[in-house]
Amino acid sequence: MHSVSDTEAIILNLVQPLDHQRDTEVVDLFAAAGRILAVPVTSNLDFPHWDNSAMDGYAVRYTDVQHCSAEQPAVLEIVESIPAGYQPQSIIQAGQAARIFTGAVMPQGADTVVMQERTSQQENFVQILAAPKPQEFVRRQASFYQAGTQLLPAGIKLNGAEIAVLAAAQCGRVSVYSTPIVAIFSTGDELVTIDQPLAAGQIVDSNAYALAALVRQSGAEPLMLGIVKDEPAALQKTITEAIAHADIVISSGGVSVGDYDYVEQILATLQAQIHIRAVAMRPGKPLTVATFPPTVDEGDNNHRVPIYFGLPGNPAAVLVTFLRFVQPAIKKLAGLAQGWKVEFVKVRSHQELRSDGKRETYIWGKLQLVNGVYEFSPSGGSHSSGNLINLAQTNALAVIPVGKTLISAGEEVEVYFNRG
Ligand SMILES: Nc1nc2c(c(=O)[nH]1)N[C@H]1C(S)=C(S)[C@@H](COP(=O)(O)OP(=O)(O)OC[C@H]3O[C@@H](n4cnc5c(N)ncnc54)[C@H](O)[C@@H]3O)O[C@H]1N2
Ligand code: MOO
Ligand SMILES: [Mg+2]
Image (cartoon, rainbow, N blue to C red; front, side):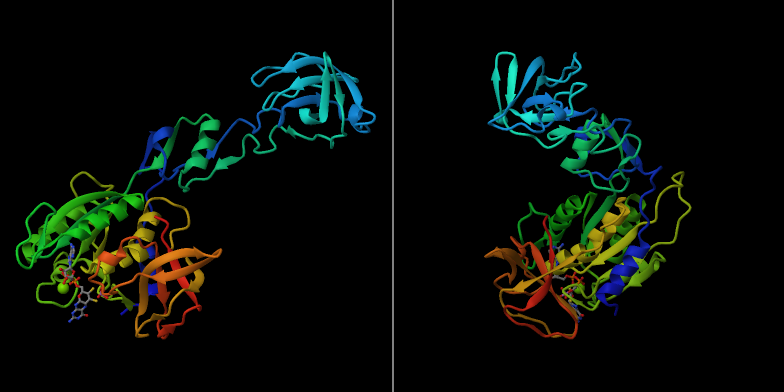
């Protein structure tokens, strides 16, 4: 049985990221949210593009106004008014100023902006009522970014801020990594689709829905392969189909020691290399991770060899093993340059938390702000890994390490905060 941290290391080591040349596509910037940038971006524009005003006020020469005050204002002649979007026409001389507005180009000769609240205008003269600091309220050309240097590196996720930067740099189309395909299927004779009446002993295949949602949230595209009966031939057919089409394959159920748990047997038949059979964690112990020998396939020489995750069937085990192991694998595969690993934060536990101390134990619950301090509260109700009801409305998993049986109320606990 592997430890959780060894399992994470083995899995991340198996993942080959998408290729930055072959596995990419060009998308319109409006469609780029959540995608991973495949090439570094450089701009030939400075930011700001030119010196400009940060305030509505007056562009002045600092030397003209450095000693002024309300009692002894500097009086300057206004030679021009410069709205945003216009090129100034004059050069400001000693004793002169230009009316200027936020974002407008600074006129030559002026080096400082005085905000209009510190001035008083009479016709085409302005009184400066307080001495500014040198260069105050001027946004200098290239002070935010210098043309020709790297604007954004490859391997970052494009969210609102990054997309705004690309828009400002006139990158209307960007090269991003292709979306990884994750095949999902469920195993079990007891499973029915959502629309079927439930006969005795039957339950809805909820894991498929959970996994499709989690895969999407992780930035990949689910490929739904349905429910597979607990029959070796059916399982072999579906696994064969899945590995031909996906970058990652996830099954749920059929990985324990029961008479109808066939996943490992079929993986062996398909000559898979099984890297993980069991993990010292709760829930999630019978997690199975495998890879397949490269096949000489028809024409598609570039097809990558997928990683197979046989998740345990219990709904809580599915959620925990997905978040702990599959999501980091998807992030690395998807081209993210860093930040694949699950990160834990230390918070106060609102209640006592218990474990048998033998396996790393994950307890689902909520991370909440209590008087400005984050606290973890476990879900009420049963923490059986078969209970999916109290997984709803949770946002965090608390971890009790091997060897520890109790975390007391008020004690510190490590928590994975799943912001969603
Ligand atoms: N003798 C032992 N029995 C079990 C062990 C063990 O070590 N020795 N481990 C237990 C643990 S821990 C887990 S977790 C489960 C894992 O079982 P499998 O992965 O083989 O999953 P199944 O037996 O097929 O199903 C388990 C449970 O989950 C329900 N299930 C399965 N698929 C779905 C689905 N798609 N949607 C909703 N629910 C699903 C299924 O009905 C079962 O109740 O094994 C323990 N047993
Ligand atoms: O993996 Mo199981 O869910 O520990 O009961
Ligand atoms: Mg079983």
